[in-house]
Length: 257
Image (cartoon, rainbow, N blue to C red):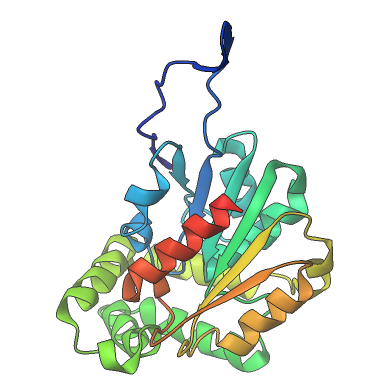
């Protein structure tokens, strides 16, 4: 798990009233969980704002092939209490962390994710991608196929964005991709758990997300008491990279609630 300390981590105590010195109160730490085939670079545009005055940790979702094991490992390394945000697969891990230790999660942000388990069609598609990725040169083919699904159609020719996305995939590699897909195949449906989520929740989605479309995000927001839905215009599945400013604003509002 990677960490980035806040700028005021070593700030001196503050004085609230004449003659009274109170301990410095650090901001709530944030734990971020990337999506399938993604690395901490997925949240690169948001890190400077998020890490101003707080600890930010990026959970490692690459080591296990079960969602429950991924969640348990991140919880073991996370601060005692924290704000939790995940994109796509990261959102599925967030749901599992809430099932395991809900009392540690102070607020929740779900980006371009879903509370549903795979349909048979989705599961078949994952298995086909895994089979292709296991062959020599097949992982590159998988990444090429995914590219057109991950971003808004107007961004498919964006070479800088493509370089970032393909760079994350290259760093992930075929073995980790297959391990992550195995975990996703076995994840439970989380829709029945939505009403019990106790913390302030924000749901963020690109308005042109083809993998987890806005109707799926609305399902989460409608199911979590008091949840706020933020729909990012002209944006596909990788909202943090496609519309970084809008997502950063939404996350800072979420932390300020």
